[in-house]
Structures are given as structure tokens and as C-alpha cells.
Amino acid sequence: MPIGPARMPLLDHLGELRRRLTIIVVSVLIATVVMYFATPVLVDILKDPILPSLPEGVEPVITSSLGGFAIKFGLAIKVAAVMCTPMIVWQILAFFLPALKPNERKWVVPTVLTATLLFFVGAVFCYFIIAPAGFEWLIGETMSIATVLPNLEDYINIEILLMIGFGVAFELPLIVFYLAVFHIVPYVKFRSAWRYIYVAMLVVSASITPDASPVTLLFMYAAMLSLYEISLAVTRFVIVAREGKKGLTQGRVFFSDDEDDE
Image 1 (cartoon, rainbow, N blue to C red):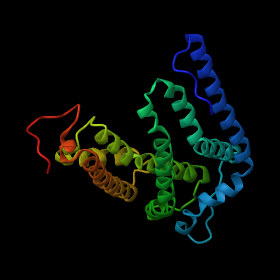
Image 2 (image 1 turned 30 degrees about the vertical axis):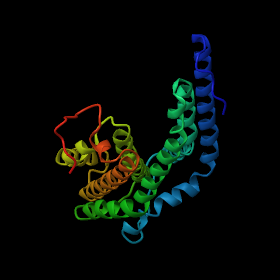
Image 3 (image 1 turned 90 degrees about the horizontal axis):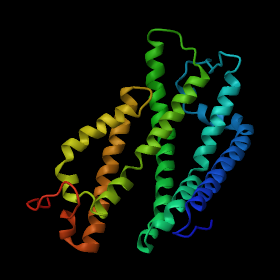
């Protein structure tokens, strides 16, 4: 996809923005139409983590006349948006790319690829590990007080929100890496403020798990802690390899000269 020049008249910039937004909208619409006809297969795939937790002989039901269309259309547009995410991110970055310096542009493609990979890893992790355990707990709680009559639309919406939440949470290593490598926040501050960061991640985990169950919250929290520690280990290795240990204390915010590396 061509990148415009850095200096253009205002109207040309607006035209460039309109062109890229048009590409995004048209691409998502086309993908939505295609995915709408594939929704029966997608629904079967999304039902797989749910069905083993249901009582024997119980199948998910749709309780409204528009429920089937709502599930198919909502699922189609969500899947289409996720499929088009790399293209959407690229169109946004390409609009701002002319304003970046050459040494800054080299980070764009690896960032897009890494962010996309991390998101899909998080969503797949949720599908295979989190969703079965989460629905087993939720359905078990329901069975202890009432008869289970699973609403397919409700269950699929929760599952998709969980997958999106885990996909977003898995972007944490990329955020930590760039904040430390570009010395926005010094590496030593990430280490010294670990207590506050751990508490903040617990709050975030509780906020982005839509089912509010302790099972998914604990899985989310454990995943975020693991990703955080892994990202710090990789970040330390990169900084020391590039700049030596003095690079671990460099940063533009929250920095004091008497801070020592742990």
C-alpha cells in the first residue's frame, strides 16, 4: 500500500484520510458478508467449549424471533473486524508514517506483526483453556439453584468478549517492552514498583473478564503476571545487549539518579 509524502496541503491530507477510511469500511463490509454465510460453522466452533459443561441432553436454545439473525450478523461483523485488524492497523499507521523518522519507521511492521500475533495467541489461549473452565464453573453454579436453559446468544457473546479480553491482555509484553526500550519508563522502575503493578493487573483482570467469575479472573491474572515477567526478562536482555547495564536506569519519567538496578 503506497505511503503519501510527509508534506501535503490540508485538503490532500483529508483526502488521504478519507481514502484509507473507505478502504477499511469496504474491507470490513465485504468480510462481514462472507463471514455471514460461514456463521453456522463458526457457531459450531464456538459451541465446542460450552457443550461439555451442559447437562446431558441439554442443547443451547434461541428464545427470540430475531435471535438467530442477531447471532449470525453480530458474529459475522465481529469476526470480520478481527480478520481485518492487521489491515486496519496498517492503514492507520500508514497515514501517520510519513511524519516518522526513517529509524522510527523500521519498528512499524514488526510492531504490527507482533501485536497481531499476540492478540490471536491470547484469543486461542482463551478458547482452549479459559472458556471450558469458565463455562464449567458458571453452569455448575446455575445447576446448583435452577434448571439450565442455555441461551445461545448470551453464551456466545460472553465467549467472544472473553476472547477479545484475553487478546487485548496479551498485548501487555509489547507495551512494557516499548516503554522500557525507548526509555519512557526506566526498566528499574518496572522492577521496583512491582507491588503496585501486580495490584493494578488484578484490577484490570477483574475489569475485562465479562463473566465476573473467579475462575476466569484468576486465569487472566496468572496469564498477565506471566506475560509481564517474561516481557521484563526479554526487555532486560535487549537493553543490556544494546546499551549495557546503564541503560536499565535511563528514562524520561519516574526517574531518580539514586535508583539502582536490582
